[in-house]
Image 1 (cartoon, protein in one colour):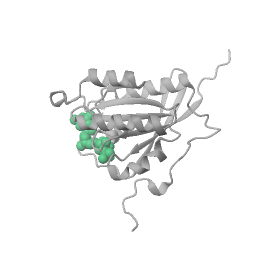
Image 2 (cartoon, helix red, strand yellow):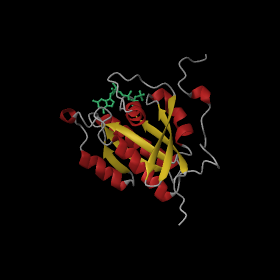
Image 3 (spheres, rainbow, N blue to C red):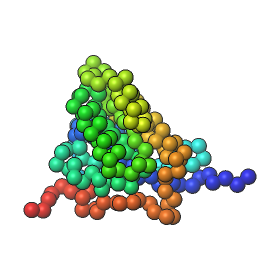
Length: 201
Ligand SMILES: Nc1nc2c(ncn2[C@@H]2O[C@H](COP(=O)(O)OP(=O)(O)OP(=O)(O)O)[C@@H](O)[C@H]2O)c(=O)[nH]1
């Protein structure tokens, strides 16, 4: 019997969340299997890609790792518009970052694409002794807002592949991944915004 197996499906994914929560570290762990104790703060946004096999299908994530610092906030819509999936990251040791994560969820619910699959990542789950946000509180919030939730650690790799794998599965179920022949990425931001290290005056 003929199947549609082995097709590569492209999915634009964006990471959002406060500065220092570990967005770049999660991407680095997922894409390269690495972790840096002193990961530099992202400027503008950074782009990565990674393919993932799910049963007989392959999802190619086109990942936009956005900068969490407030001064870059106005750039965010360029990255989340047209995204098939968004991972909103907070740091379990910092309750202010959980409040900020909820604001991102609200912004996406109001201004994003309703079909974007949203995941909530409670990162730095290796730092249990410094925990400020309980898993129960985050899980309840996630259920109420139709997100799926995992606690992750970019440092120990706990749940990092799992969260991306779960997103890929949900994307394939919802068919919101794009046919590569049609369009690889929608609303791809201009390259001049990517990792710009100096700015014009
Ligand atoms: N213990 C621990 N530290 C982490 C983890 N993830 C990231 N870090 C550390 O937290 C700091 C910030 O990580 P980044 O990945 O730069 O955070 P970010 O969210 O990308 O920050 P911006 O680029 O400024 O938005 C770095 O020093 C990382 O080493 C984790 O899971 N556990």
